[in-house]
Amino acid sequence: MTGATNMLVIVLDALREDAVGASLEEPGRCVRAETCVATAPWTLPSCTSLLTGVDAGVHRHFWHSGDLAVPGLVEALPRGMRKVGLVNNTVLQPSSQLDAGFDKWRYFADHARPFERAASLIRRARRRTPLFLLLHSNISHDYYKPSGGVYFDEAFPDNAGGACTLGGRVIRWNRTTPEQRAAVVETYRASARKVVACAREVLELARARDDFVSVVLSDHGEGLDYDDARVHHGGRLHDDLLRVPLYFDLPSGTPARQSADLAARLASAPVATTDVLPTLFALAGVDPVPHVDGRRMDTAPGERTVVSEDRRYLYLKDRFRLNVRGRDTHMSPEDREQNQRLQEQLAGPPLVRSYRSSRAKLIMTCLHLRPTAGPPSEARRGLVEFGERLLGSPTLALYGDHLVAFEWYDLGADPGEHDNLLAGAGAGVRALAQSEWAPSVTVPVDGRAGGAEMDLTTFLEGAEAVSSP
Ligand SMILES: [Zn+2]
Image (tube, rainbow, N blue to C red; front, side, top):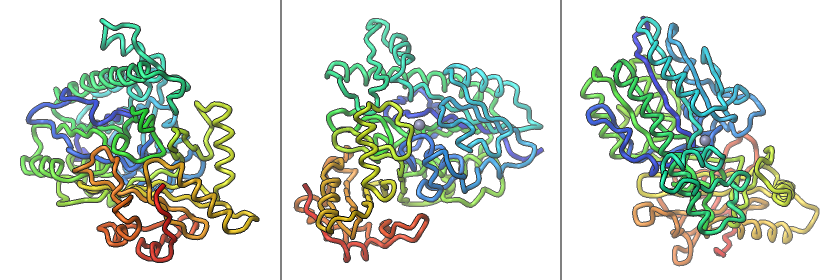
């Protein structure tokens, strides 16, 4: 006996928070988070944060190359538990190193097989050997593939054949008409509906046994807004990517106080995807819960600012997505050439980081230009030109050969994140220096990998402000 109960973690890849509906909920058993924030906007770093409890800016696992420097939380589970991972995204194959600590880790190309395997494992779970089961599905992620058309016809039989699957156009939605773009959104919704239905079937098996603590979440959302250049995922940190669904499903034996505290916390303050496993472990009776960046939601009180980050991708205004040291998947020859050219201008990968509280978000985009033989004015012009290609209307600050672009959004008044509070009458970096962010934000301008960052106030004192374009 380990003292712990069975755990089921269902990760529905690229499922937006607003695409779930009410169908996973079950009164008295199920608690839903009002705001759960992913720590990264795409699969590898976000799933790494989920499985390690460590923030993306700390684990920096944005590439398959190099060692993952932080241990997986499953390694802290008691001996005698069986730990199985069933994954459905090629990014999560063993080269991701996320299989560490699992007894079994299987990748399936097929969408149905992970659910079938999970159902079988749940049915066969025995009290003597509790199960930790990670079930990952790519159904909603793959709406741009032919399977999206199948799910569309299932969801909308009266409009069969009306799907639009983007295939290799998914990064930029290029060469699409407004009608096709509307059909893309419906194809995504149909795929989301399918994956939620599959998840519910498995969840109901675990519910019926009443000896599983279950959690359903997503690793990030998906951009469906062509006109705002917010499409696909990675490379930006708007809420369509960062806000993810999160549901805990508790067995009837859960102490009433613990489930009430969890429900109160989930209703009142943002939580992060790094918090999910520490909380699940606590609910399942694992003791002690490892100490990581993520915090237990069933005890932690109060407000929280979640820090999210990407260092691999950067979306620009024209829906071009810079992909640093990638395999150029789904990129046209012209985009590959542009990708190469932009990387040659940079001294290192770009960094996009957000600080998100319940009411506001600060987004910071940092670029470090490679030194050139030309005069400083040339470097300055290169940075400003780069800044003008960034999404939104960021406020630009220059610091040597670094460019840092800031956006600050009031999520209560402007949930769509369209009005940068620093632009125009916000008076740019002066307003930022006096803002609530000044004490807690640091800026990576020294260029040392893993090195210390400069505090925001010192950075702003030394930086040259450039008026917003
Ligand atoms: Zn993903």
